Amino acid sequence: MKRILVAEDNPANRELIRTILELRGCEVLEAGDGEEALLKIREIRPDLVLMDVQMPRLGGLAALQEMRADPGLAPIPVIALTAYAMQGDQERFLAAGFDGYASKPIDAKALWRQMEPLLGRENVGRHGPS
Ligand code: MN
Image (tube, rainbow, N blue to C red; front, side, top):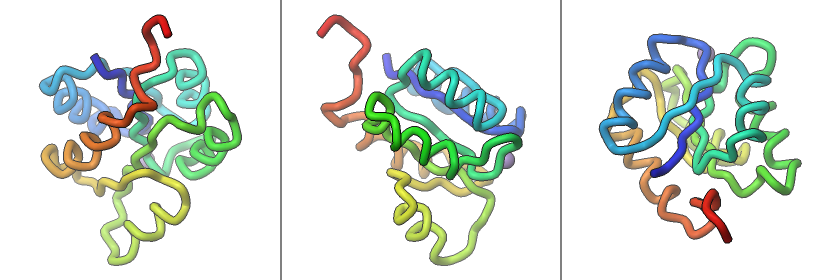
């Protein structure tokens, strides 16, 4: 079972994403801001992170940069969640180091399309005995 950390300060969005991912057989863990996200990512080593860009205390981009600076966390794929729907945003977030991009309001199929290839990577699923 793939473990997904959803970092998002809006509880309604977290609940929606939880429903979408649990229907696809994922285990979902939640964080309400960037600092809580980093604590949980260090603790549980999720297979993938969905990271809201705008969060209190620590934003998604700063949290991503902390992950990439930590060799243990750097390989974990991170998808940006953002309410921005401006043209060019996708390229901007990919250039910033995110592995994918999903705009809000969340579309279940579009979100899963971003996630699926990243979950198939060989560097995920490191929870069992190696
Ligand atoms: Mn937010």
